Image (cartoon, rainbow, N blue to C red):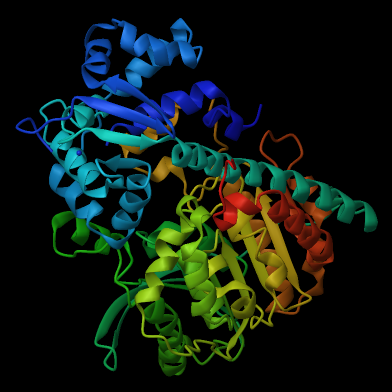
Length: 565
């Protein structure tokens, strides 16, 4: 059974339990809710909140609650899990919850769930949900589902049709990722069988560090034109060579340059100078500022503009400093750019991708858009002034991305402007930029014969080992969930980044042998979590499979009625 099947059950039990939990979402005791009404017109069923409170407190199932549990055919083990779900608290500051729910992203989520949980009159319940969550977070024993229920200010109606549609859309994300993971594995096998056999054991193991010792220094830059100050982590071989290649790597949202030391050290050990700029309005410090109340948003809107401009300014500064600090040895006429997540957007933008506001607006209106978490970030760009933004930097000759945010903001017209060698990396467990919608769908849009798509099984967008203990504990509680070693994923990424830049930046054909499906198979030998690599050769069948996927799920994606009369 796959991770997704384990994590989200597709059976009636999960639907019913999730609907019960959906009734969990706003103000306090002076006005408090007594009932949750489940509406499936013309039918209405009532669940008393005190029935759930009694069950949460001592495990008693009264007649009112028993009706729903019997409907879902819940066994004793599942009752225990449901009770735990109701009562397990999350320690989170109520002020932080309030701030999160007042961001653009929080408003979008509340509006969506409010379409399921309505207040009398059938109106969107977003304000009720916000209030209940904040009040529950103020409780001494922390934010829990039962505490949210206790803090509902009025009776609520759960729109069963909308709830079922929500469950179906969640399943669509899961099934889509499973489906395209299988398709990529099949396409990789076809490509591998069509190429000459290679004995990689007789070739250089590019997972290992190169021959150069690496030094790490920091540059502090100030762009007077934008009044923007940021630092750059610089990784370079101790001995530079004439015409030394340069790679700029852009970090993701709520991240920092230091988080990418592994890939930077690996590339530098093979002779590259790797520069990783801080993006001040979307880095970890911005997140800290948001948490502390110094900023109202998780990231600054203008980061869609400033990030690619950071890369261009950095290249300008390296050009200015080339003689004085690098002995004139840097090759800044032909550079590579990499990026992770939001940094993937950045890398694609300087590589030529252009924002397509019409596509973005249409994507953000889709009913399914609420379940593609990548749109929480991308849809904010609709607040930008509508201009023909052109961030392309002609010095950029190759783009390497990992989990790139790109589907809605660029679309086919925007990505078709990328005419240089491009690499997409993706993860099968990625909830932030779902593989089916952010990489598998958009890879065919790239306008180059030198394109590559790598899927890593089990990769979940971030390295969970680097997260705070609370998140790590949460991940570990998921039943039967195992994640690959971060070191294995680093090997998958680092080896492909090296071979990609060696071929398409250095014109070193000795490394082209690694840029094929057979090498992914070699890397995966003996591993539970494998990696698959396909090239532009797989674009036609991948496009065909995606069209079939869209046709099968048209109603869910484009907002038609899920259940027709």
